[in-house]
Image (cartoon, rainbow, N blue to C red; front, side, top):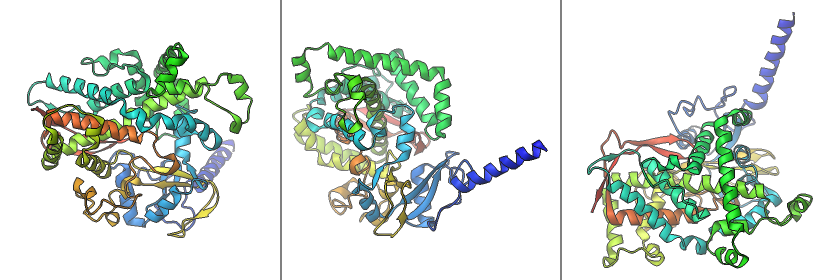
Length: 500
C-alpha cells in the first residue's frame, strides 16, 4: 500500500513539474519541451551536433521571429524581430539583466557587476565602467605588442612548415598574458616556455576554475552548487586565486597616496583598489542605495570576473580571425597592403593603428560571420508588449536576443550574409541596422570591456600580419566548425605560419 502511495505521489510530482516548467505557455509557438532537458535533445545541443547559433537560425525558420525555447530548465521567449530587439535594449526600466546571467555567474562571482541589478549595479558600475575608458586602454599598446612578439617568437622556434593545430590554446595564452599585465600588473607567464602556464600557480588555478565553469554552466543550479562545494579541485583553485588577488590588493595599498593617484590614470588595479570602502561594517549597515565603494569581497569578485571575461571572448575572436585569414588569402593580402602604407616604419603607434580602416572592417566581419557569443538575455520587470510583433510579455519572463542569428540574417544585410566579405562595412552595409551586429551585447548591460577587446584584437593582428602569413593547413585539420563552451570556438583550426 505504501509503495502505491509513494508511486502515486511521485507521478503527481512529475505531472506538476512537467506542467509547471516543461509545457508550452500561451499562444507563442515553439518545440514542446522534454522533461528536465527542455529542447536540448531535440535541437542537438546536448549531443554537440549543433551550437546555439545554429539552433536559433533553425527555429527561426520553423516558427518565425518569436518563439518559445527551453535551455534545459530555463524558459525563454526568443525574439528575432529587429525592431522589437531595439525596443527591448532601449527600455532598461522594463528589461533588466537576464536571470541566466544572475544565476550562472553568481555561482562563481556573486558580487560582480554581471550579477547585480538596481542600486547595487549602479554602485559597481560607477567604479567598473571608467576602468575601460579609451584613455586607460591605449596607454597599454606596448604591453599588447610585447605579448604578441612573445607568441611570434614561440612560433618562429617551431619547425618550418609545421601545421599549428593549437591556435585556440595559443590565443588563450596570449590574451591571458596581456590581460594579467594590463589589469593587474601581474605576469601570468603563459608565454614563457612550453608549459609555463601550468607552472605558474595562479595561472593553473585560473585554468582549473574556467574548465570547471565550462563544465557546469548548463547544469541546473542546484547541481552546479553542490558540485562546487564537493570538488577539491575547485576549492583549491578558488583559495589560490583569492590568495593571489589579496596579495595584489595589499601590494597596491602599500603604494604611497601620491603614487596611487598617479597610477589611477592608467592602471586598472589602482583604480579598483581606490574604490575600497574605508569602513566596511559601517557600509554594510546602510541601505543599498546609500552605500559607497566596494567591500573587499566585492572587489575580489570583480577582479576574478574581469580575468574570466577579459580573455575568454577576445581569445576566441582572435582564433576565428586567424582561421578566416587562412581561408581568405585575398583579404589577408589586402590587410598587409594597408599595413604597408608607411613602409618606412614597423612601429605601431595608437594613431597608426587607428588609421587601419580595412582592419576594422575585417574584425567586424569576423565578429559578424563567426560570432563568439550566441546571444544576450533580459528579464521582464513589468508586464509589457513588443510594439512591432504585438507579443505580450509578463513580469518574470526571460527574453533571449539571438545576436549570433541576427548577424547572419539575410534580411538585415544588403550583401549576401552567408558570404565572408569585410568590404561590406565600407560600402553597402556600412549603415546597417545597429541591432544587426551586437557582438558584445547591447543596451545598458552590454560588455564593459568591448573597447579593450577591439583594441587588443586590432593591435595583435596588425603586429602578426607585419611578420607572418597564415596559410590553410588543409581541409582535414582546418575544417572550421563550431564548438560550444562559454564562447563559440572554432572546432578545427590548423594553419601554417610563414614568416616574411
